[in-house]
Image 1: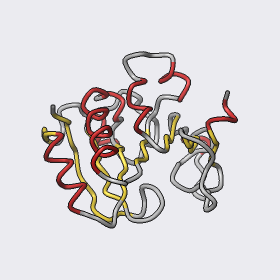
Image 2: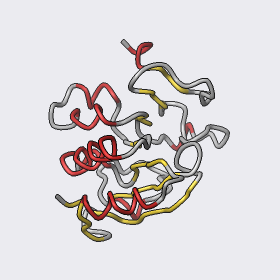
Image 3: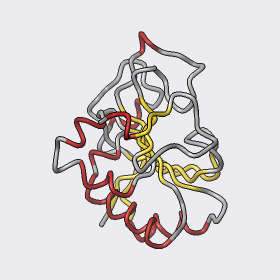
Length: 168
């Protein structure tokens, strides 16, 4: 199974707490005005990489957790779901994922929702330039939520996080 990858950042601290291996995928139709990564909109950008190859890159860095960004990983759900499943089976790493879809849109769509089972944190919603707030951690506008998908946030929670239980 393959993922269209635009870039991989090693030991980044911009894509979630602590050191992270960030997989930036190619392809996004949200086209948010003011997007910080518009080159990622092109579904033909970057290169194809096998899930096995990405997993080896992720496993090679014992210090870093994982972030999926883009583009939008939810345009490549089958492959990202497989990668996330393998990360969870073969490592102790956490996975953060950014998307322009809302959690509710993902949950309502059986084609999108399978990946949620393997993600620890979802940063959801489109970036809204008119609401841009540079004081926010790990998101660009306040409509975007940092959602812990499997229980309450850890004791070192990040301001603006929303435990899933509060969304029901």
